[in-house]
Image 1 (tube, rainbow, N blue to C red):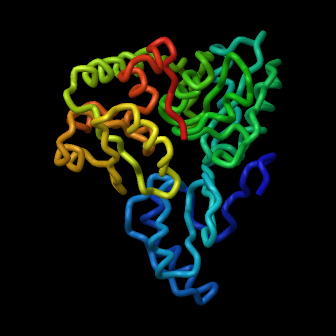
Image 2 (cartoon, rainbow, N blue to C red):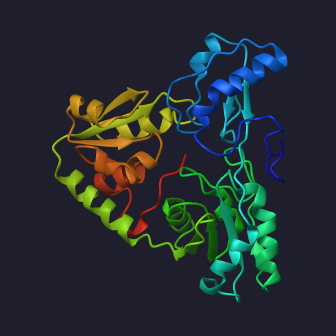
Length: 311
């Protein structure tokens, strides 16, 4: 698959795009058995994305079919079955009032909607906007696709304003931080609600965690994930080298209980970046991103040079 266009839709008879995919596992397994006579084993473990493949299941099967996400790297024996969610591209008209027609608009979205980027671009262009969609890469193979851990397509667009289409504002805030402060308008394609993404609240929360970490007696738990697309061993070793009391902690699942039991006063997360940004409230102590840890250590990075962590 190249990066010039998005993934094809699921074929007829594939899993429906509505509802929870895991709840459709029994009927999907039944369809595979009936259509091809395959023996099927269903993975019951939680899955947070293509960075979290059920590779253990390959010990029991010849092929792993991963539903719902685009690949973040090349994995032998894995078939990615993309699931796409449709919306009316005309909904983009809701964002026009918040966009500057004198400036090019970078268009970004998640993989579930990336097949509609050209249609949305056409709507905006029909209203006189110049639209730029950044090319995909190995981790985000669709044009304009962003992940919570990768905003390369946004940087490739090179624009000072963006339209993000998707639910929530986390990705939109990430686009702004990853592009050096570009203005980002977020549009929910289902409700039609549009708002300008504001990173200030996130930054205030992260600054508070950095200050707590400065006061901690043991800033030394460097989390190293064993998940397929989150394992950043070289980075973990680099961060551990910044402190003589730092320890690398190998973990499959990063949970509040596991961190509490280990007993460190602060952790540095090299696994999914969203653990620090989205889930901090769940953890008993500060969980820093790698750039934040560099700020805490001093002499490496200043707060004015704050960047969002990406894989």
